[in-house]
Image (cartoon, rainbow, N blue to C red; front, side, top):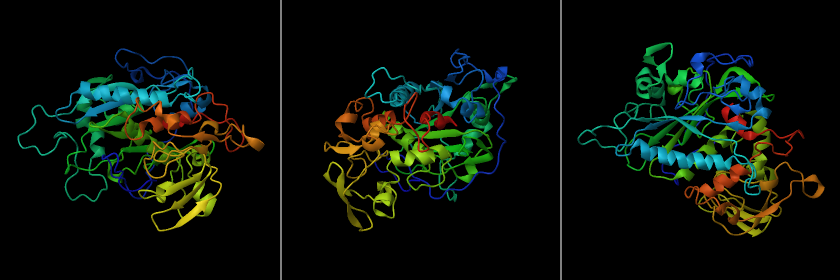
Amino acid sequence: MLRGWIGCLGTCWLAVGCGSVAARSDAGAVDDAVLPADARIDIDGRPLGNDPEVWPNLMSAASSDPWIAAHHDELREMHPRVLALNFVNGRSNAEMNALLARIFAGLKEGSRYHGYRDPAAPAFLDYELARSVDLTDHPVPANWPFRNSTRYPRKPAGTADYWHFHYGALFSQQFADHYGFADPANRARNLTLCELLERGIVHEIWIYGDADLAGDVNAAEVLEVKQRYDDQDRAVRGSFDPCAGNGCMDASDIPACGVSFRIPWVNHSRGPGCLIHSLGHGFESMTGGAARSPAAIPYLGKNFPHFANFDLLDRQIGAPSQSWYGACGSSCVDFTGTNSLTWHDNRGMTGTIAQYDQGCGSVHFPPNARADYDDQNAFGVLSTCEHLGLHDGPGGTDLPEIYTSARSKQYDALAPDCEGGWQVYWRQSFPGYRNPAKDAAGAAMKNWWVYAFY
């Protein structure tokens, strides 16, 4: 789990420590029966389909539905739905939606397995906007000190919680009335956020806010409460991880929804790369993260660390940190060759690695990064980004190839900030739909993207 403030984004403060969530619901048995009518709510007139290879569908609509795990290997597309909340006074929903469309495009491109090699590679993730909600002030009160509106949920001053954005308020009936999804069984009331999540009408809640004016409350890049699974991808009954995002949700905010949900925070003044970057940290944490804490998804906990170089430093030199996240200050690596380097960490330790033998890299650290956010280095180093699990190198190893920033530059225009080009390239290197890789156990590698909605 990453700790501290991510300065490049200017949007987030990360929590310390992870707790556990009390049991909220029992995981149901897999059932291929068609969903009840009240769960088949259209989005902009588009009903759920009956294609079992495209999720959500008439058989399954909510995140962490056991149906997803049961049909993991059959899925060819996922269309997660976003409820977008605009809190920025002076910004219209049209402006928010335009930024979200660019983020959706970057996430879609990033889900094309090895798209940099295969122009015909299909996209697996195709985000959809369930609804955008205007929560700005009309008019803004006189002398209001913040860019975020009066509806932006703030906890009272002096609260002991880590986050002072009141995530729990989003699940209230008051906010349900802002969202405006009428209950099909009682048109006089609106569905709460838990009900929207449980019915699969919404899968993620995106906060569109302002973090550039000092003094407003802190919030996280991305939080997720995720159903925990065992090493057979079976849901652990009633167990949810509140730390599956980049930080942990405060216990006082966690609702009793009984399904996984994700809440990223979108800075209105930044481009698409920053949110893609943030969601990458969420994926890292879901796998156990750089700190190698217990993973909500054990399968990823076994297969992701080498890809992200999270097993690198302790394996190579017995360093106290497992990755560069815990070691690097403003600069920490000097490459002495394509597969060798010298390093110096923020504790004053130094050393050399004569044979680096790395995987791919992490959100902050491309293969040739010398420090945090170093995504434009033209120096070439060996990595196995494009060969994870393919065993196509000497002696059945993954073939290393020279990586330079030129490999990810093709995506810089799509996501021009917060290492956005690298984020897209990195994501395309994840084992995705119909990948031919083998996992750590020697079996066919599963599509990692499906796990995002377990």
